[in-house]
Image (cartoon, rainbow, N blue to C red):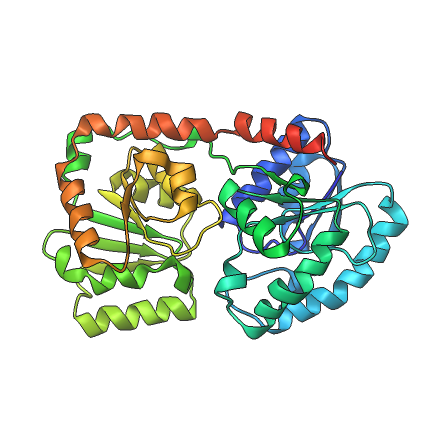
Length: 358
C-alpha cells in the first residue's frame, strides 16, 4: 500500500499527527509499501524503511490560506498520478488527506471534517468541497474519516452508502505526557490554555469576548500560527485592554506544548466544527480539564469527561468557570485514564478493520 502525504504541510498539526499514527499502524500490520511526501519531509519518513516518492515542497500545504498552492497541486497531481501509475499501478494508494490522484483506480482518501463545506476559507475551497470532491468520492474505492460524527455528515451531504466510509480514530501516546507532581498545585493554577487557534472556526474570540468572567483570576496563553485570524485575535485583545492577561505563542515544539498542558488549569477549546479534536485528549493525558463547545463530535470522543458550553451563551461560560473552580485533585487522574482508550493499539485495530474492506 502506498500512502499519499504529498499535501501534508507543517508538522505538529492534527492532520500531521493522524498521518504519522496511520503510517505506524500500517507498518505494524506489514501493509506499508511506500510513501509519497514533500521533499522537506523525506528524511523524517526514512524511519519507515520503505520506498519514498517525493514531490516539490511548493505543492504541499501551509498554515496560511493560499489560492495558488491548490492550483499548483492540481496541476502537479496529473504528473504524479502518471508516475505512480507507471511504477505502482497495482498498489492501492491511500491519502491521509482529501486529495486524490486523477488516473489511479485503486484509491482511498481521508476526509477529516466538512468544515470547508460549511465554513470555507475561500471560494475555491467551497467549490472543491461542494462540486469537485463529491465526484471524486464516487470514484474512490473507499473513504476514511476520523469520527462517527463526520461519517454521518459525509453520508448525508454526499449521498453515499455508509458502508463505503470507515472510521479510524486518531491516537495519542500517553507515555509522552507527564503527570503533574502536585495535583493540588495544578488545581490552583491561574493559567488557561487555548491550542490550535489559527482559524476562525476554532472560535477563540468567544473566550476573549467573555474576558470579564476570567480576567481577574486567570491569564490566557493562546497557541496559534501566524494567520489572519491570529491577527484578529490580537486586535481583539488590544481593543479589550487585556494584553497583560493574554499572551500569544507560535512556532512551539511538542515538548514545549506538553509543558503548557501540564501547567494549565484548563484547556479551552470552543470550536464550532471539528473532525476529531486531538488537543482535548492531549490535555486529558496531562490531567488537564477541558472546556469545549457542545457539538456532536466532542460528545462522541470526550463523552462525559469534558465541560460543555454553548460558546454564544455568557451563562454557559460562567457555569463552566464555576465548574472549573469546584474541581478537586481526585477528579483529574480519571481524565488521563480515559485518554488511554485512544492509543496506538486502538488505531491499529481500526486500520486492520479498514483493510478488510478495501
